[in-house]
Amino acid sequence: MISIPDAESGHVYLTGAGPGDPALLTLRAAHLLKTADVILPDDLVSDEILNLASPTALIVPVGKRCGQPRITQAGIHALMLEHASEDRSVIRLKSGDPLIFGRAAEEISFLREHSIPFEIVPGITAAFAVAASLETPLTDRSRASKLVLATAHHAAGKLSLTPSWSGAFPDQATLVLYMPGRDFETLAQDLMASGIAPETPCTAVSRASTPEEHIHITTLAQLSSSDVGPAPVLLLIGPPVSKPVR
Image 1 (tube, rainbow, N blue to C red):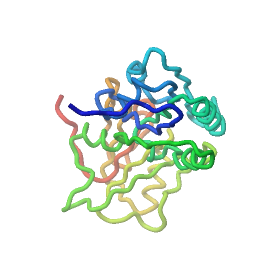
Image 2 (cartoon, one colour):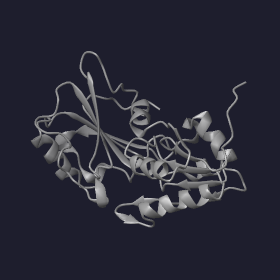
Image 3 (cartoon, rainbow, N blue to C red):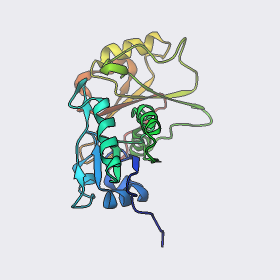
Image 4 (spheres, one colour):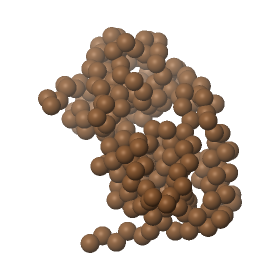
């Protein structure tokens, strides 16, 4: 029997909801959902996961998508402070892992500044779910000794298609690109300009780990917006993959 503590009053839990499939939640995250007073979820957190919350929990969506925020980051901070100060337990629920492209640094800084006790609860990031769906290792000692996680989405909701590294892209590396935007042709041109060969395998996975998952396997030169499914999309560039037989 595993003993997992309940959510504590006055605490904030920066919690990863995983890539979408409720079965991929950690035991800690699932138990916190059942025992927390307040849940502040991102847009990408599925209803199936939110349905695991206590019936008495207050759920306040705080998602920000496509540069059109419904709530500012300062507003999220204010909600965490308000509820924790009123001795409620608060889950700040983020898709994937809270420390991967989730603005956790700003929230950690705020919580520390206001002396609010907090805990970070890891989640499965989308890159790992995509690799599992493709049955393809992200690293391989013979052809991919490096793993680069990057995003085209930067501060103030702006998209930058400029590569996130200087110089040529490293040899024997797998690139996983989060939040790539929708202009895949231009993105591919920028990546090829950075030194990635046009024939490099490129796989776009839409809504990974969910029943709506869509896998499109191509090359970087042939990457086209018309063939890629709806957001959220993650691009895997590097190791050759073959679509698993279902």
